[in-house]
Image (cartoon, rainbow, N blue to C red):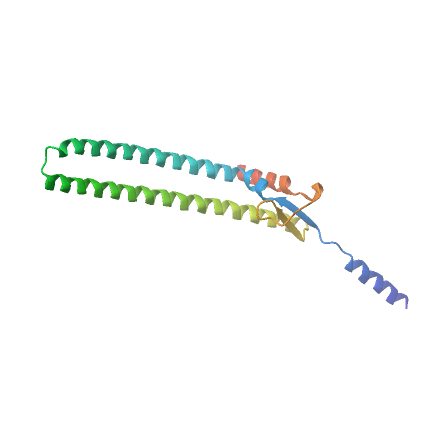
Length: 168
């Protein structure tokens, strides 16, 4: 009978085991991660360079169009129309090339950002496994935590680990 009582107590104690739960502020974690900031900075520089290139080409095409309009007054209508069509085709071709460059830049930037987010998720998972957490919830954009005690917030701890690993 005594063995049965001990067994009941052990089963009761095992069933009372609490899962270890913490949470992170998704926005703070991602926005504070230095690699993400570096990726954004690199993307912004490339986007700025592309914008300057586009503006420069647009200005050159505008000047060429103005010169053509002056020149066209002394041409036959047929010849003027032919040259205008050539100028318009070239302008469209350049516009398409610039648009392709913009799309490629956006795709590359998004792929790099997705890689950073994957690293963050992997680090949160590794942290949880290494520290015995059953759950680490996300707070902020797309998160499921409406309230969490400050002592359960793992954001700063995981952010420090991420930034330390990135510095190496």
